[in-house]
Amino acid sequence: MSSEQHLALTEVGTNEVEIMCFYIDIHAGASVYRAYYGINVAKVLKITRLPEQVMRPPLTTHDSVYGAFHFKDRDKVVPVVALARYLEQPQVESDAQKLIITEFNQVMTAFLVSGITRIYRLSWADVEKPDKYINAYSHNAFTGLVNLEGHIVFILDLEKVVIELNPDSGKNFFGVANAVKADRNIHVLHVDDQAIVRRMVKRALEQDESFTVESADSGQEALLMLRNKLAEAREKGCAVTDLVNVVVSDVEMPVMDGYTLCRSIKDDPELARLPVYLFSSLITEETLHKGRSVRADGQFPKPQTEVMAREILADLARKCIESPAAGAA
Image 1 (tube, rainbow, N blue to C red):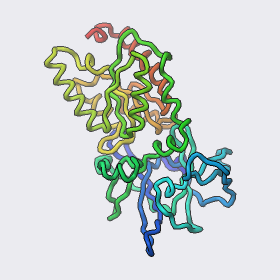
Image 2: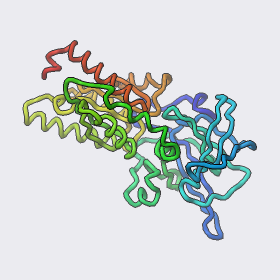
Image 3: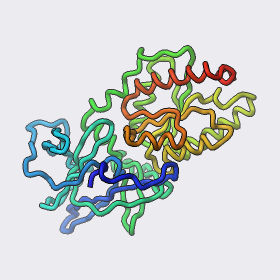
Image 4: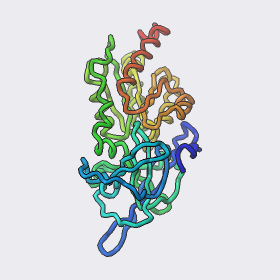
C-alpha cells in the first residue's frame, strides 16, 4: 500500500498520527531477537519485496548503503539502505525481507527491513521522547518510543539517517546568508524534535543579522515557552510579539505535534496574532489543507530554508503595512 493510496484518517489538530510498525530480526548469540520500529505512514510510498536486480556500487560513502534499484513507479533509481547496518545490528537475512520506499525532504530512499507488522493510529501524547541513554547507544537515531501491544516500538529519525548517508541532501538548509535582509532583527521560536535540524536551521537563519533563533524540541515545550513570554510581556508592558516575532514549527513531534501547537496558539486570544509557519518534510500540495485548517500563516517543505526565510520576511512586511499599529506595538 502506498501513501498515495492510503489517505490520512487522522483529523488535523487532534495530535494524532498513523505509524507503520516494522521489525528487524537480529542475531543474538544462538537465538534471534526481533526489534520493532516505526515511521510515519505519510512518508511511505510503497512496500515491496527486495528486487532481484539491486545494483551494488563498488564504493559507497557509508557501510549501510546496500545498493540501488530502478523504481518503476516513478522511473527513478532509488538507493537502498540496510537499516540494520545503520543501527549496527547483525540482521538475519531471509527471502522474506521487505523494502519500505519513502519520500520526504524531496528525497526518495528505500529501507531494507525483515518484515512489516501493521499500521497503528495513536496520539503523539503517548509517544515518549528518548532519554539520553537511548540517544547515546542509538546515535540519536530515534525521535520517540511507544508501547504497542506489549512491544517497545522505536520511532526512527529518518531525516537524520538520510542526511548522514547523503550530506548533500541537507545543503539546502544553508542558503540564507546574504540572500535575505530585514530592516530589523526577527526573533524566531523554532520547534523541531530533531537536534540535527534545529542546529541546521539556527545556523542557516543566523548567518546574517536578520534572524535570532530560539529553539524548542516539542510543541509542548514551545507552548510553555510562549506562556513564559506572555508573563514577561505583561511585566514589561509590551506585546508578546515584541519578544517573539515568529514561530516556525515542524509537524511530526512526540508529545505535541505542530498542527496541535498551531491550533493552540491561534485559539489563545493573547497569542493568536503571533505568526506560525509550518516547516516539515510532510508538507506537499496534497497536505496544505491541513495547515490551513489550523490557521497556519505559511507552510514550507524541508529543507528549503531560504524560501521560507524570504516568505516570512515578505509576509511580516505585508502584515505591518496592513496593520501599522500592530507592527508598532
